[in-house]
Image (cartoon, rainbow, N blue to C red; front, side):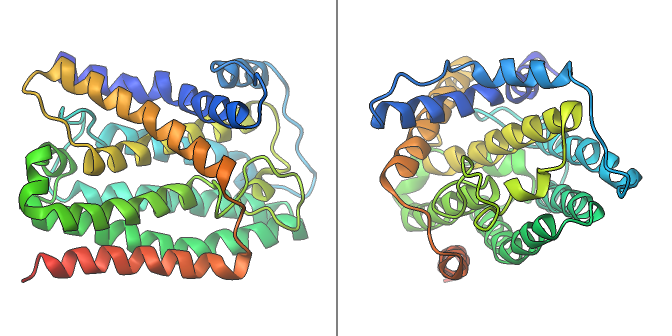
Length: 303
């Protein structure tokens, strides 16, 4: 592992919570408030790690293992994802399949932990999460397959290092379609508006947040940190498709990718400030739109 790969490996683990801070600052700006500090997520994680955990007598080891297994899955996914055109720390042929299904395993253990509590509210959130993921995962996989077809490689590192701004000259429509699909998947998988509201506390409308109501202390810190890593990792895929800056200098490419990630945080903040959450019955239509965009991008490459 060279220095650049090690740097891009450490970036998500260090900078992921700051992306949440950028989103919250943007939302505060549009609401006319000062808002919390950009580094507030770090303080909250530190506080939770120093608290004790409370477990219900109805839960088993499944409830305690869920946050740890989920965090391990997203950490491995972060190691597979390239950043700034630099090869990932772990790269091998067809690693995009493992990458996609690591998020599936993360969701599976979170759902199991929610069901293990015996709570009807958490079971309701788990059923919604699984229903929406059944449409989000095909959109992600077909979108990645389109990029693989375009670049001629099934490895994430080779796929995204093969993209540049010049790729838009001969495959612009494909990249735009994949970018639109990945943006919808990004918002869905990270429980953001218009699919879910991360700030809501009304159980009848929550999807992801309702599944983690009974977690506390370090377990809840693992869940929050895993969610921040997931936000960063899926965001890195999106910026590699939408803004594949390649200057020929690795340092400048990484800096450009960091600026694009900050811009993505601002974009999410703008979306959440200007849009209302969709009704639950309309979310599947949005996800089907993402599937159609990914499929259309793949079909265009088959001409």
